[in-house]
Image 1 (cartoon, rainbow, N blue to C red):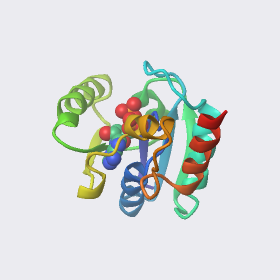
Image 2 (image 1 turned 90 degrees about the vertical axis):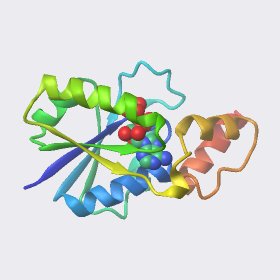
Image 3 (image 1 turned 120 degrees about the vertical axis):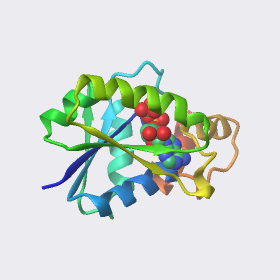
Image 4 (image 1 turned 90 degrees about the horizontal axis):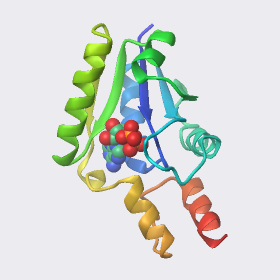
Length: 159
Ligand code: ADP
């Protein structure tokens, strides 16, 4: 059984993340989308909200599972017996950080491979932060995030 972990903050999940998850699901028997409960980033959505939004957004992916975790990604991958970590790559700015992370993860567990999937052009400049900035000021994020995320953003920013 080939299993991969796709870890991230997903605050909130965007169509860029979904596109990576869909492609990973074609490569592996099972993909665990692992939502980090402890992050150095201050999150706008709680971990249970992020899990719920992700679950709704990947309902069409039969071999995807959504879980939250609060340990090192490499440890979580080991616990779940995954052979690979999936990471998405956008424009060149992602490379340095992702290379550092992959090198550190390799040091922590040399059996685990990090697999990078390049995003498609339409999502190259899409990030959860840009989505939050635009939504906060009432701008439309239609077609950039799953519908359920769009609704939740509207609700939260109204409140
Ligand atoms: P983290 O806090 O771990 O970087 P993110 O939720 O920001 O978590 O991102 C999770 C993964 O998805 C990262 O590998 C990131 O590079 C990737 N990612 C983020 N946005 C996009 C996008 N628009 N297209 C493809 N991959 C993306």
